[in-house]
Length: 207
Image 1 (cartoon, one colour):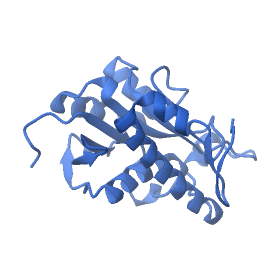
Image 2 (cartoon, one colour; image 1 turned 90 degrees about the vertical axis):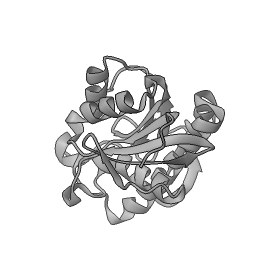
Image 3 (tube, one colour; image 1 turned 180 degrees about the vertical axis):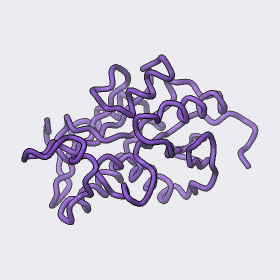
């Protein structure tokens, strides 16, 4: 049971449901939510509006964390229903998602704006009719071969990439905590030049 008072923030990770998509590039948003769930002991144990949700405390803030169970391009409806049900402001929602326009391992925080072609983010914008939510973009890079975009994002991380992807999910967890504690600008200043490489964590310019 959720408490009756209104949670302050909604933290959403984007991905596709089902074991077929586990640890695929498109699902790194789910990986980040799983890491937040583990680290802050917030079980994803409740089903609300076609999303797995949990409620707990991050950086002394009352939050809902969520993984929509619709497919990526339909993420907007469960997210919109969660916002309406819990009475959370759009500006107090953080959406964690993969981004092909960032080099692999790069994290970048964005306050509002367009979707950059990401179908999950576009679905949220279209359903809310509002783009004023915070995004935590996790770089998955682009294929170096002639692999199509859809095939690429639905591929599993390679054995060499998976450790870096897990570190990137942990970095997203820290970025969420910083935003909730110190604000979006501080989060940008601290994390927007960070990149996780396959071999180690570094700070560099990325793309």
